[in-house]
Length: 205
Image 1 (tube, one colour):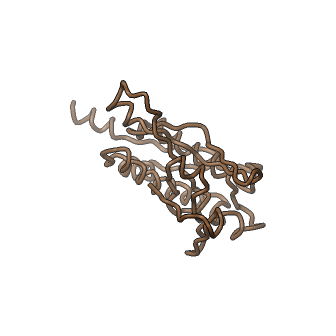
Image 2 (image 1 turned 135 degrees about the horizontal axis):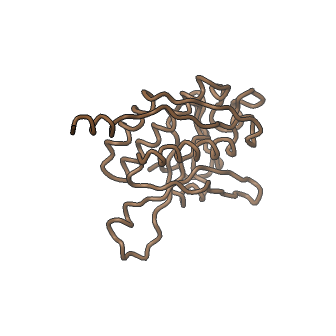
Image 3 (image 1 turned 45 degrees about the vertical axis):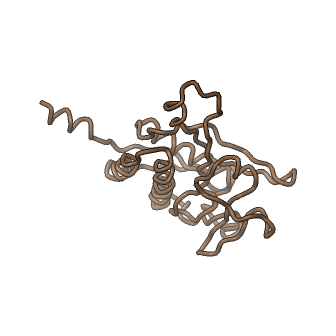
């Protein structure tokens, strides 16, 4: 009997969601993740011993899932930022990415594979009064568990897949750093500082 229960507990079923592309989520396509793919994600997240390790695993997991989605949809053409894939069918802007990555994170959360974070609504930053950018966002639960009486705000992080080509690990960065304009646009191995050449290099956590 214990072996049967163990087998049921470890079973993973296929799952699906819709991804956005062609800017502003004007186009969507359904994506199916196989049980085998989701088991890989579950196992990757399952070895995290703390919030820092879970964020590192999430970076890889989101890259994997977007790469698998690219095998089924035009988003395989997506490149980091908005310039390397300008005019290409399947390109994704930050609205497409923040919406899709939030859906991916909520899928992981629905399977209870996130032990140290919860998923929030996408974050928004505004630079130079007119430059808007959006990203998926998570909040750390570790502090709440270890310091229940603490009045400090839980740490928040962005999971920003827009910066990199389809299938590459997402950028996971502390929210205050991201709001300050940090982040790299990377495509084809070429990195450009998103905020301009005078900015400090981004710090990823």
